[in-house]
Image (cartoon, rainbow over all chains, first blue to last red; front, side):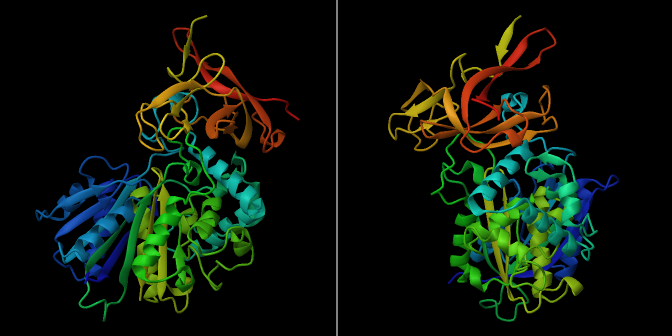
Length: 379
Length: 131
């Protein structure tokens, strides 16, 4: 029998721009917050998600808090880095390797269009390292194949920005209208500026520990943390070209693969999920996630947001934190900030953003590589 | 005027250079030593069709990292008869003038001129007729 894993505590440093803080400072704040929340336990290992923080980034954070000699592993999996760190930590506890593990994610993103070592120099020189253009091609495909409209893309932004108003950890905390979203400048047709999240800075931390017996008595248990990469032939599902591969319609994208693994591991299905935090790098990415996670049938995602299904108060609230569109996206921290939000949701601790009666929560990230992570939590 | 390709082995003046796997028979671009589908090393370098259809398109309005040419420029996915889709520049920067399935033809186009006067050239696709 594998051991159940519970969330002992969570911590976060707000997402935004902090000129006077280093990425280590951000991590220290989130880790201290999580350790305090979990009763300052002795953790036996630490995993740090980050893509841009450099060599031994996690070691620098823990070094600032007092070295203990535990193994510290930095984990990079693009936008899913935090999810990857969580998977490794949970697996180690389930296997009996450790009883308590610290997982954290840190990032200070460069400004502007993200420069990524993923692209070969010639692709950069040829103008092909245009990340928003890949998002735009993916959005266009979703519009063509699932009947999503630009108005519905704007409604995703309206919803998430409305949710973010009450989130003190979000970067943007003002409501917007669909007219304003569609009035912002076109970055890459069909995506307007306000439909794209802002790369920024932040940190989040989660302490995992072995649950007494199958999670009984736990506040929140980690039911599954799955990570998958893509199969050959599904390039545009995560918008990053590898080597000109055909993007085939009959190949499951990494989000679907990870979701399937996570549902199976948790013993739940999409219908059991009460609240979702999903990757909304751009507005279309959120709608695509509804379909790829199996939350709604292909072709219904646009209708879902239009009908308010995914608003707080709707049948299945998505991104009650305000999502990346409100928070901004520090790659290494974003997946763990989802867990911070979902644990608070399951604990009834988020005030006006509360999704009432939530018992099963799902977090999803997907990014370059392509990697996708799906996390399932239960109260 | 001296010219150089943005990268060796991507294209000739007439067509893209792809790879065809002798084991699984699938095509890929750019040509690789190992088939990205099945892992076989039995890959031949082949000329890809110089015409295809537009499968996705947008315009890049701000210079992406490392790019020294003009904006806006067209950007999209071209479907070739060999059954592969290629990420490419598209010689039409107004997305409203393009549509799904538009016929496109291979071409080369200058990106920018290096400090020593060398023109850097890349592959691109030209819509058969812009509306």
